[in-house]
Length: 328
Image (cartoon, rainbow, N blue to C red; front, side, top):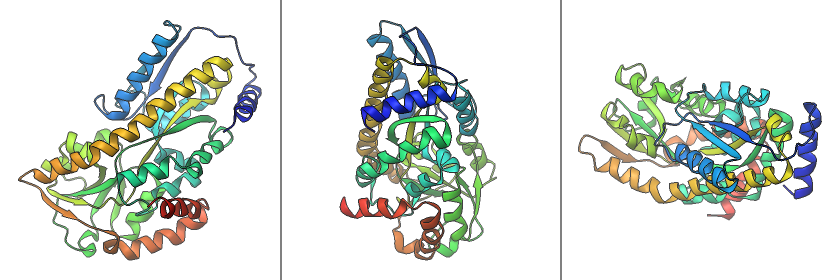
């Protein structure tokens, strides 16, 4: 987004909430996340707060609230819209429930691996989607971060796609994932992240859709020893600022916050490029784990069904597919 467009957006948001951009003033801000404190996103949020505090001599403070302390993502998005929350690092999954174009990121096998996913997330096509957020969601999207590729972890053995039939699979609460798992003949079960471990331990779900970091860190494989390295979807994160809060910031603070957040968001992408293969290798090395690598042919019918639905719901899908092809 150009500097002119940034300025126009700020004034448009200001007009929408009856504010005008203010002179630089003390800002005590909060950023919400659903990830646990030791997660890459949570650490990035803390580091961003430390940098803002140092850069402004303590005039801007930013306190991170990880682990869903401020609510689930739907609740935090509502807080951002009202100005009750300043910032969030949020899954694109939640945004796609409000702005369906973002669902294109979850196209099955859009990316080959985590490095390829990074090239897609960093593309101009991806960045231009952020322009939709002020009008359609009442928030400013300052940039994308990432989590790892999506994998499957199951309590029961899975050798063919037919073995997935009827399994109750935890998914991130997002239509794009629901439609993929419906196409596979499973029973997709939306569930917030903090509830996942107990749900597996108590057999409330048969399997989960999850990224490598949390598969390893939370040791889900101790409850579900079948691990399928599928890399079936990338999983972007978006850095958000409340539109109401943004409209009340002066131009210099907007620039500082934008640049600082973008730097820390981008660093999460680099972290996952490095760490995602390491985490999966550590999972594979566990003696109790039945580990398999599975490619798109395993899911061919489900992929075609998903594409038929989402090509219409998210027209940007064709452009993202083109980016994926160009960056292979």
